[in-house]
Amino acid sequence: MAFVYKKKKTTVRLGKNPGEKYIVATANQGKVTDAELKEFIQRNSTLSEQDISLLYRSLATIIEENINLGMGVNLKNLGVFSPNFRTNGSSSVEEVSTENIEKVVVNFRPATKLRDAIENAPVKETRKFKLKHE
Image (tube, rainbow, N blue to C red; front, side, top):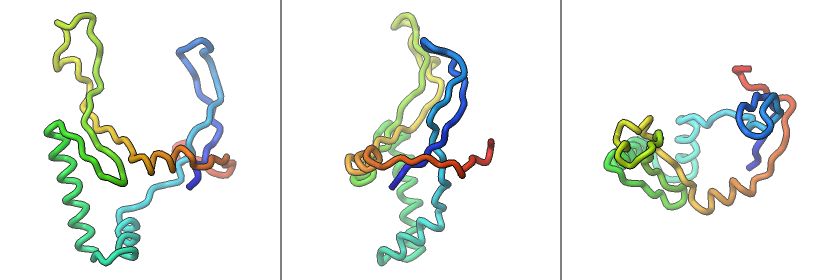
């Protein structure tokens, strides 16, 4: 596993030194498609394509139902999905209500092994990769 980065020009508006700066930005290398993931699982297990599709649907349903109940879902080797709010602060406790909620979101905390692999992955620069929207 290796992360690839590019150098990017950005405008910093807050902080001690606002202005145009250059930063390190992740150079997205694409996504694994649903079909590719299913094919990988099928090659590395005894599950059929139909079993894998059923597993996907079941897992999505279990996560959705439990998040909607306010519960987190812990997938041992993957991590924890949990519900959270993006909110606006209030000056007093009396002003706090559901009106403060900007958005309901799902957080993901990777399992220790996955987190360690990500934190210890090498990082390299790319000069050839350009994101589509630039």
